[in-house]
Image (tube, rainbow, N blue to C red):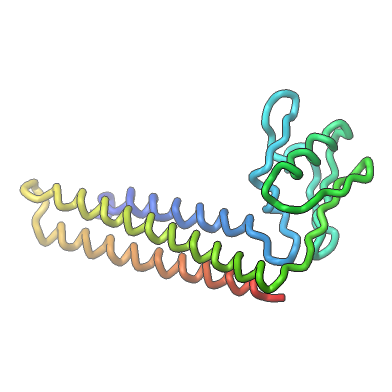
Length: 183
């Protein structure tokens, strides 16, 4: 019986982990090197994450410092940041690129919280869709060697799993919202 629930559990876990990773890239006043996770630079012809061509550090609460291992990468990294949606102009002193994060305004914080909640809602919808797919799959078992009671048990297990993930998603969204609103 457990083996019938496992694939849906795995899909829900992927949805949850995807949300967690997405929320990490939303900045909350403090400099977070994860905002660079989605950025790639052209490194000898192949798109490469910035973390693989440079040392990324956070020397101060609102600053990210990027020190490329090869000086020739400075321009490429700077260009990648400029064309991205981070919204911060990099400063380049010839050996290091610095990103200084301005203090977030109250209005911007509220926008970010809305965005966080929207991402949370989308993930909850995905989890519910997975539950629906599971229930559909269980209904197709009618008339096979699986009894109706076992089908009901499977549906109930899947519902418990769904409830657990919805609760976890709500907690993740609440934590991130608090983090964003903290000045």
